[in-house]
Image 1 (cartoon, rainbow, N blue to C red):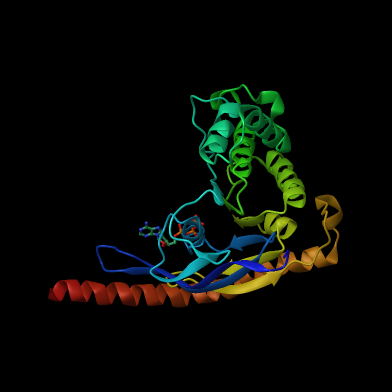
Image 2 (cartoon, rainbow, N blue to C red):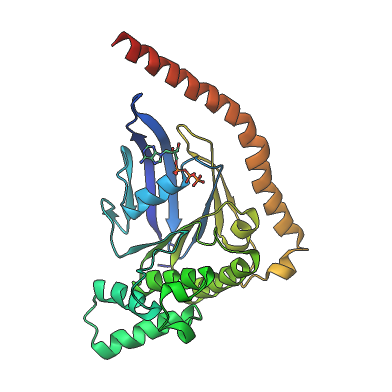
Length: 284
Ligand SMILES: Nc1ncnc2c1ncn2[C@@H]1O[C@H](COP(=O)(O)OP(=O)(O)OP(=O)(O)O)[C@@H](O)[C@H]1O
């Protein structure tokens, strides 16, 4: 069943209400994701990446189309879709251990106290945070907090792990360590992952496919780039790999050549919509 498509976005679109009328952020987003796939979403700032993720998380409701996970429509948040945000959202009054434990208790699967303890410890171990289990968020670094956030999400045993720029706020070295941890965890657990990133190297290093989004309004998927690099991947070995560099330049080309041209068209389109709405408001 490993290769059965289990997450499907079909004709997804969303309009946000604005004082000047509805703003169509996304239109016709179609994507089929296989179980265990690691997908990166990349695109210019404001194109709609977080909106896609929020729709899959069930935090936003699509205006058109929808999302199906294992034959069930996604309409609300659920423990089978865990989210990791850029700014770790740990409860500040609870230790690392207690933050993970809370998530485990919320997704109770009939575990005994002993089993809960073992499960929390196991997930802290996965992200190499066992040594700081009793520390409060204020007592650990940003990278460590992010590790705990990932442990908390993994402890819920989600079918899909949704990560919104999970390493965006970290320094380069911490970021590299965490990327390696995520690759190890993904190899071990085989979760389906959708990750938003602005970092082209990160996208190529981690992904099975890179989904490149066009600029908004009416943003959609522009191109999908399959990354056929063997796993496990090693960042140092890949730096001189012609295939790696080819993928890297394909993403850069999309972002800085193809999307730059489209940008002026979208801006023009946005301005036309704005002018039309202004005129309508004027008439009213
Ligand atoms: N709740 C909302 N109400 C109105 N407009 C919204 C809302 N959420 C997002 N938007 C608009 O939708 C578009 C897409 O936003 P989104 O945050 O998804 O982009 P993004 O690609 O994730 O951006 P970034 O890379 O900067 O985080 C933007 O124009 C944004 O202003």
